[in-house]
Length: 102
Image 1: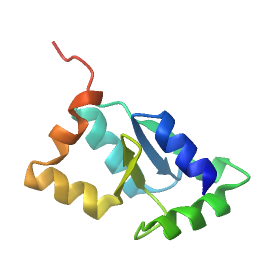
Image 2 (image 1 turned 180 degrees about the vertical axis):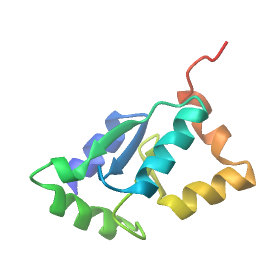
Image 3 (image 1 turned 120 degrees about the vertical axis):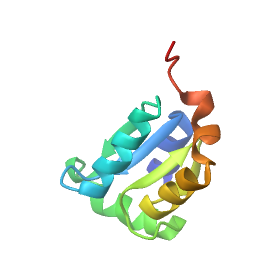
């Protein structure tokens, strides 16, 4: 869990992902379309990936990936991200991390 907390605190927007996960890809594209460029951490490329998955589940993720952190805080997985987006709450959350699109 220490590695997860450390990475989340170092990166503005962090998505724990798996390279074969279509939901992970959808969340990544959503963030990019909103002008935010998250740091993507592919846990299937890390020898400690299984431990990271377990840590994410202990932290409250519904599924291990995608696990989205913004400003060091766990936002959640696909359902939570999409709910925030549909309610209009995601963009204000990402605003400090959005690229200047002008």
